[in-house]
Length: 112
Image 1 (cartoon, rainbow, N blue to C red):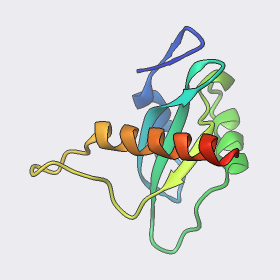
Image 2 (image 1 turned 90 degrees about the horizontal axis):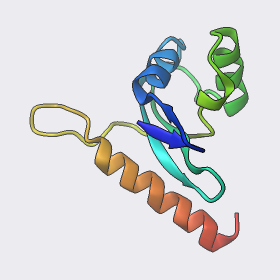
Image 3 (image 1 turned 180 degrees about the horizontal axis):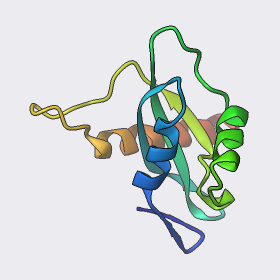
C-alpha cells in the first residue's frame, strides 16, 4: 500500500495496469519518498526482449486510456534486468523499496 497525501493506493492495482502494456514483462510498484505528499508511486519494470523501455509519458497515456485515477499513476520509472528474489522465486519488494529510497536520497543530495 502506498499512502500518497493521505490516500491509500493499491500497488497491486497499479502493477496490473502496467502489465497490460506490451513491453512490460514484470512490474513491481513501491512507495518512494515524497517531500510534499509523504509517498509517491514508483514503478520498477522488467522489459520484454526487443521492446524499448516505455517513457513516463507513454505510461501516463496508458493509465489515462485505462481510466485509472490520476493520483494512482506512477510518478517515476526504473528499469531492471531482474528482480531480487527469495530462494522460492518470490520478488523481494522490501529490497526494491530500499533501492528506490536510496536513489531518491542520492537525487536529493545531487540537487536533481
